[in-house]
Amino acid sequence: MNDHTQIQDAIQVLSTGESLRVWSFIVTLFGDLARGRHDALSGAALSQLTSRVGIKPASMRVALHRLRKDGWIDSRREGRAGWYFLTEHGRTESISFSQRVYAPADTSPLAQDKAWHIIICAPNSAPPTKTAAMFRVPGQTGVFFGIGPMPDLPETLSVSGQIGPTPSWLRHALAGPELQRDYQIFETQLAEVTALLPSNIDALDRAVLRGLIVHSWRRLLLRHPDLPDGVFGSECRIGPCRSNVTALLARLGTVTPDDLARIA
Amino acid sequence: MNDHTQIQDAIQVLSTGESLRVWSFIVTLFGDLARGRHDALSGAALSQLTSRVGIKPASMRVALHRLRKDGWIDSRREGRAGWYFLTEHGRTESISFSQRVYAPADTSPLAQDKAWHIIICAPNSAPPTKTAAMFRVPGQTGVFFGIGPMPDLPETLSVSGQIGPTPSWLRHALAGPELQRDYQIFETQLAEVTALLPSNIDALDRAVLRGLIVHSWRRLLLRHPDLPDGVFGSECRIGPCRSNVTALLARLGTVTPDDLARIA
Image (cartoon, rainbow over all chains, first blue to last red):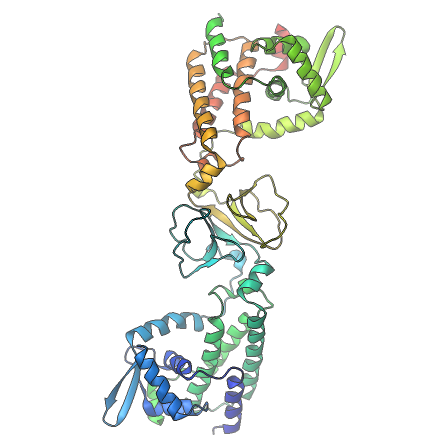
């Protein structure tokens, strides 16, 4: 039932480019499959997931060791089986970032969004404590723009409301030519994977494919501020990538730790 | 009926401080009394108006000559009488500024005014063509704020909507300590004049008093941008001055060229 070659090809497509950082990919797997409070992945399941993308068992053990040392994951033994799970810290980080990774397509035109602001600090003043949704305007000192609730910053000049069309100098500063090229490559990869996927895929392959897609997507998102896709302009393919990621993850369906436990 | 001493005292109060520039005072008189398309003031009326504030006939003639040369006023003779009137240019300028001079008290809290904007130009770009309601943010380059319709400036980052409380560094940059002191002095003068005014005043004295009030007010307004009073903060007495000017002008009543023609 499982079209092995096509799945292998899809995994290949998603693995080209930069070599996969093992610890980072494992963080992605936990974030996608096991970010619930009582979720855990068995050592056996992790071995199968990582081996399907060409990660050697020794590399996996080193990565798990590092993630435990850094406080991201913890483990427990049950008889001969080892179980790995996110720490409270790892869970918080995963949940925080999952809001950005799984955000649905951004369809609101910027012009209709009234939650923008520009904030100007006193000349020669110390920089303010930035909030998560507050971005320095490139080329200016002490000038910030942002979306969402206005931060409470005394002694600043601020206007909140609608944003105008974003100028090209801002779009280029937020997402430069390299990032734009990488989004183009990712868009092509997603189209190839969409064409390759057979209708029946086992849970392990679904988990691996989800992991690879989310991993690339997460790494691209981390390279620019968390702003509506429209800010980056139509030449940046973040919007189409988001639609394709959403569609592919829906097609692959969610995979639970239980699904994997039955197989591994 | 006319309490001459009190009126003289009121004129004295409004004439203290900087010496009156004759040509500038005459511009104010025309703007207040004769800015209609067919309005004209006789040489005789102008002589009486200016002599009541201590301007010598020779100074008045020099000023009228200068204003004609500069294209502000023109004149015609009718028999032995000379009539002076604003040129089209002088009228346009007078009407334009009269909107600011006679603007009623600004009662709208800034927070409820949604017509503000901040505009940020491309780094190192040439400064944009400023509109009348667009002000450079002190201490920044290529950053402007303003009120009213958003100017159409491509390649700028802009947010339009509500303004936050204006910071002290902006208030001080817009209206420094000298201007604040001069508004305090003017507020005191207006209170003294209000206390001095008798109930019956002839048209010439009403015109002179109006002229002196409008002249001081106009010169103060010209020293800062045309922004709602609340922007300058409560420590700047522009708002109370505006209320007092409005009340005094209402109490003095309008004076027409015809009123003066009957006397002079």
